[in-house]
Length: 529
Image 1 (cartoon, rainbow, N blue to C red):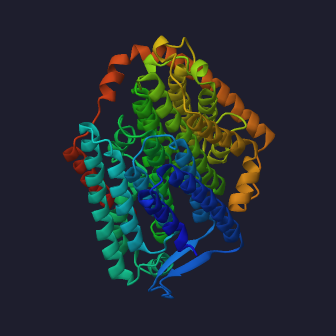
Image 2: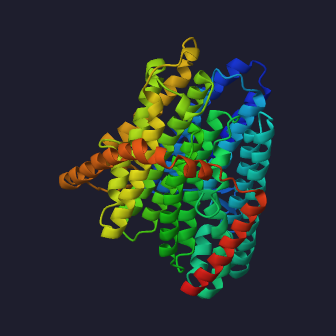
Image 3: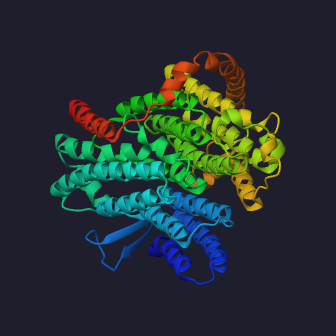
């Protein structure tokens, strides 16, 4: 029955496009999304008892196309359906056309397919479909800048997926199958030198999907296109990047004979640092959120490539918590821009006074990302930093300091005097409610964090009181230092930061960075092997 998790969102899309009573169709679509969420929860409960398999077209064995729901994929299916349900409710009163919602729900089906498929060629097809649909959503308003950025996004994804296709063809030549499980078995007995080329080709595409250095530069600009609806940015930055991280985990299992964890550890550190610096250089709230996503992806990559089990689980849990927090903040940013008429953080003040519900949701999401006590980020970062070397501990503390500094600058819009021009605006209660609900989920993920990890991953992990107090003290000091940085250092370096904020690689330079990364990866992976 797994095939229906892919088909139902597409059927919802067709239904919305064809049903004559559009408002009624949106109500029915919301109900269908809620029912799909219930089915996703049921699937997760089944996956805890054992992996769930479906052979598409009744072709049994490894020669068919298999869908598989293990605990990890079932968790991401739940996350995907929940986020799209929130986006559906958020957009309920928007005057979107049928085509927009058709594209949105088609994207949901493609992402769910990525989480469930066991077929490596299916990953190529679904990734291409999601890229085309996402590009169409970005170009939906047909503004010149959004059209250009959408085309760049599409062409870059086409290029990197050609690398993936070449790597997949070489891997098929070595193994003769596309099924993940059978490929992993075949790879385990091959000479590691044979795997360097397909590994480098495939990992280039995965790194691009994750938004890691040096091929991340175009993603934040795409996720923060001013004319694009807030729901699109929320899905791309909050969810689609996590699909790239999920694929990284799957391909790391396949290429287990090649251990290059230290390489991706260094890439994660450099990506996180660049993400923090570039986020601080921005003044547009969407761009600040997009670059902060890059920083958090770097932190997650660090945890995924450590040998400690605690760090791995903490990173996966942080993927979930960050996805929810970033969805809340992107949706809130869209509402703030709608009410204030600008996305410049220096011109927005008094959000708490004008929209207290949205302000509360934003505060909850910010506390979740920065790792405040009793929030999801606190639990995930506690486990990521557990049992690491002193040097890595200091590096991750500094990365979190950077994250805190970003959101201190971002959060200045919550306070202050309300501009007179927005005093008469009315905020959509559907939108305000969804922001608050997702923000509350960040708090719930912290209060019941240990229970959530036990439920989701079957691991009984606990936070020690001494460790909790140590992290709380470090966090308090980081907030104090972050306030000083925003007040004194950021204004002092305003000109260099402004120049840095203008960083916008052309399509040719993006292609050059892709080629450069592949050449370096081929040399480094070959040397390590």
